[in-house]
Image 1: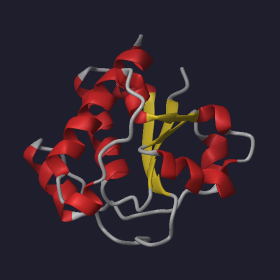
Image 2 (image 1 turned 90 degrees about the vertical axis):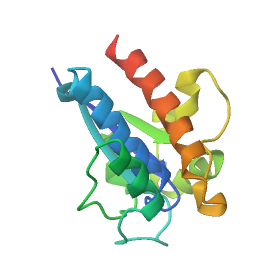
Image 3 (image 1 turned 180 degrees about the vertical axis):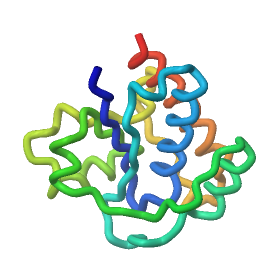
Image 4 (image 1 turned 45 degrees about the horizontal axis):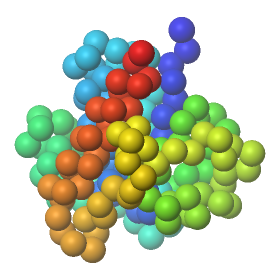
Length: 151
């Protein structure tokens, strides 16, 4: 069985998309279905390319016992969009940021919280410093997404 290829996407790939990548992967592993998914994250912008995970996201992941060492921000490419099964954005701004890369792959794009039945953005800690609210949004979205995809 081919793994479902998921790419979580945000503006810089140091806060929200990285948090979602690692939390979803951890949830899937703990649920015994980790091999069913190939999980990555990317940025729509070049602003943070090569930078490590934001300290606020690292603190959340460390508290959960999740190691994200070795992760550095990468920008999404057209090839990434072509090979992914799902492109999971954190907010509407990310949808606009995907425009140069998306090609005919619009149908693969979903907002993370859509899986939880909510039409809203994942809170952006870049402006608020509130990584706990972001964590609650990411956790809620990832739990619902895993449930939907594992069925």
